[in-house]
Structures are given as C-alpha cells and as structure tokens.
Image (tube, rainbow, N blue to C red):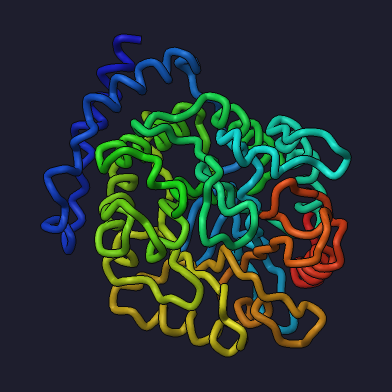
Length: 396
C-alpha cells in the first residue's frame, strides 16, 4: 500500500501537461490539490484493492474512427450509401446512478407504483435494459457523476445529485452504482462517455482545488478499476452557467490536458474531451487538446445546421481529424427522410439521443426524467431504436 501511495503522489506531482500551444495558459493553481488528492486516493486504493482487473472492452481512436478492441465499430457497415464504420451510436442516459441528497426534493421522484425513490432500484433497472439497447445497435451512452436535470430542462436545480463532495472527494455509494454500470458495459462491449461535472451542481464543490481533486480522483478510480472502455467528458456544456472559471470555456482545456497527462500504471491513458451547448462550435483551445470533439444538437431545428456544424468543426485550424460526436440532441422526426440523426450520420459524425419527459407526458417517456423507465416503451424511444437498428443493423 505504501508503494501505491508514492506511485500516486508521483503521478500527481508530475501531472502538469506540456501542451505546446497552451502551456502558458496554465495557472499556478493547477496543482493546488496535489497532496490532499494523494491522501484521498491512498484510502481509495486501499479500499478497492491493489490489482486492477483486465478490461474486456477497449476503446481507441484511429483518425476519425472509434475502435473497440482494435476493430472499427460497425466494420464494413453502410446505410443509404454512407459508411457508418467507426461511429459511436449513443444515447444520453445520465441518470443511471442518480440520487437526490436533498430531503426537501427527494419526494418528487416517487415511482408510479407508489414506491419511494430508490437509487439501487434505478441502477438495477438501468443495467437490466442495457442488452436490449445494444441489440438495437447502441454501442455507447453518456453517464454523469453530477447527473443532469431530472426534469429535462430546469431554471433552478434544488436537488442534490452529485457523486462529488464539496472537497472534491468521491461518494462511495455513487461510485458503487457507477461501477456496476461500467462493469456491465464492459461485458457487453459498450463504450461509456463518463461526464464529471454538470452546471447546477458544480457550485456544490467548494473551490478550484476541489474541482481539480475531483478530476484526479475520477481518473485514478477508473485506472485502478482497469477500465479502458470509458471516454471522459470533463463537463456537460462548458459554456453554460458554470461557477468555477476552470470549468468555463476559456480554461476548461487545462482539465482536459491534465487528464491526458495522467497515465495508468500499465501505460495507457483515458481519452478525453468536453461538450458545448446546442449549436455551439468548440473553441480552438479545447479542440487542440481533445481526443474527440463533443457537440450538441439541442436547439437545432434545421438538420442542415447539423451538417454545417460538422463542417465548421472540421474547418477549425486546430482540428486534427478527431472523431466528431453529438452526444446530446433533443430533436427527433425519426420517421422523416431527413432529421438531425440522419444529417449527422451523412456528415460523418456520431449522434446521440436526448430524451426527456415533456409537458403532459407520462412515466414511460424520457430517459433523463426521474423516475426513469429504462425500457423501450414509449413511442419516441421505439422510433429512435427502430431507426438506430435500421442504420446499424443491430449488434449481436
């Protein structure tokens, strides 16, 4: 255990990234959390065990393509004359580990059967649904440590849904639920886009040092577990309402570069990026240091704009042929010949379904709305998965 402590401390103290174009942007606060993070991780590694498991599913990138276990996803598959090889067909499923630590709002999430909110039930039902998603062709999904609005969109977020404590340490109960989901994804050959921070919850973290500590703790937890099927999304929509400057567009590249600088004991590293709000093209500082580019289609009503967003991203001087992934889009029209999903596929990008329970809808609707029906039981969910299976041919 003593050896592991000093290995972790060395990783932390050497973690300042040396990204040439942005080395001068990194403030002295970048390593402020080093020693306290090492102390926290000593306890984490001790509790979890010293030997990391071998990952059955390994995600990598070659040019604009995602590979699983060294092979392009959907190898050789074409749809309507378009190759979909190397794509991540994904859905926003961020509430798989949800809980509400605020007793004043927890009662909002009572199940339709009258049972009180139960985070363990939620995770069990999530895991039970995963094989059917995959059968239809879903090979990736987004899961968050600070969740997303359980109402879909919210002006205020009084609930407390966060795997991250105020000091940047991680809650064991959240990690346990998240870990079970990651384990099942690993077994199924699915990729998880794991988001760390979410606006509306990041203000619960005390300061910048705690933000950095949370990033380090998350990465080292994944390395200790041996996960190689996880992509890191630093924060959901960096340009929207974050309290901490290091999570805002001008500085979030520091955290991306920090993750890239941290390697597992075996030598591999996690792939990392961050996302922007709907219709927004990422900044040069973020594209320069990202392994993949996350953009959102929320608010984009014309599919032609989806095509344009992909073209604009590729035209950035800093773009290095990284894969472009929509991992959130709340526009559907899956029965029409052209929609945001189809536009993204034709443009060479990956696309992600964002489904929330809209006004007047009931329990089966919405994957982001709590409590969640994780099955494919609403017309909108069925329409998405039907289109997904048409495009991908499904997965065995």
